Structure formats: C-alpha cells, structure tokens
Image (cartoon, rainbow, N blue to C red; front, side, top):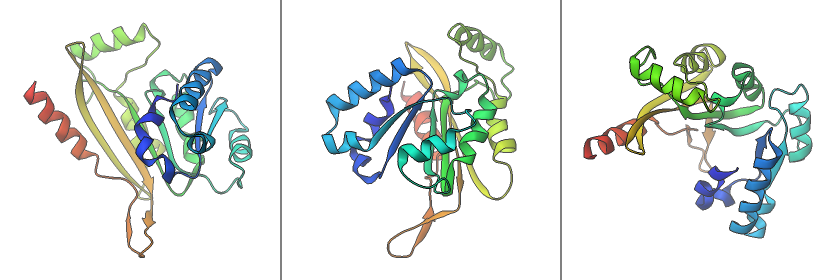
Length: 212
C-alpha cells in the first residue's frame, strides 16, 4: 500500500526515483491514491507504481523501462518491508533483488522474527502458528539465508538488528537486516558507509521495553 513512503516524507525530495513494486494491483491502487492525496505533485511524480512479480524473468528489463535508465544502473536501495515472509519463493526473490542492486547499492529487510536465535522455543511455535493463519512465514533461517547464503562473502557489509515491539500488549519480535556493497562518496570526497549502524535500533528497542 506504499505506507513506507509516508515515513520518508522529509527525505522524499532527495530521491531521483522511487519504485513501488507489488504483485497485487488493488494494493498498488490504495498506495497510489494515498500518495496522490498526501504528497505534492512533484513528489508524486517521482514515484512509479509497478504491478509485477519480483521473480519474473524480465523484471530487470521492465524496471529499466519504468525508470528510464540502462539495465546496468541498478537501484541504490531496495527494501522488503514486511513482505518477504509472505512471498512463496522468498529466497529466489532475494537473489532477484540482489541482481537489481547498483554498484554501491544496499538491501534492507524489515520483517517479523523469532523470539530466540534458533527459533525453537514454545513462544516461537506459538507465533509461527498464529501468523501462519494469515499466510505469514516466520523462520529463524530467514536471517541466515540472507546473511550467510545470498549475501555471503566479504563483498558485502552485513548488519542485523533483532528487537521486540508491543502490539496489543504482546511483545512481537522483529528484525531489520541490511546488506550493502561498497561505500558512498560525499561531495567533499569523504567516503562513508551507505548504511547506519542498525545495532543502535536494537538498543533503543531494549530501552523502550524496560520502560514498559
């Protein structure tokens, strides 16, 4: 539904182009309508709404047409926001996203997680069973596949923050995982990491949990 765009409001003007990709046309229409009513005409013009499967064989060619650039350019930031756990061929989707990254690109995954590192506790069984009713797959191996298989090797800098947030009085586990390539060169020539230290996010969540 493009909800994440509203969290980027302050930075929206910094983007050259934003592509919202979803396989469901109804959800795209909801997001498009919301963005049209919320953002300025110039901001809305930067957003492209694409109804397509990320695992489609022609995904790279079709997105290049939408963005009006070459196939080799790629995307600087690709996100899966609470969507990876609902994609049947999710591992294939990660490889597809990897192929779409630019030379200094990064991939961010924000999604539900298990309570324990290995995901084998009673609480993990309960949350898996509960979310499975809505077609959501929660497995500890998701993090491992991202970090140790799809983005394995020294070419990528990887960060994973695990934390819990309250929902209707119940602590729900989440993770934010980032895999990035290279660094970004600033106008003054200084090269900096293209992703912040996500471990700070986990610390913030822990402090919030103590307060509650």
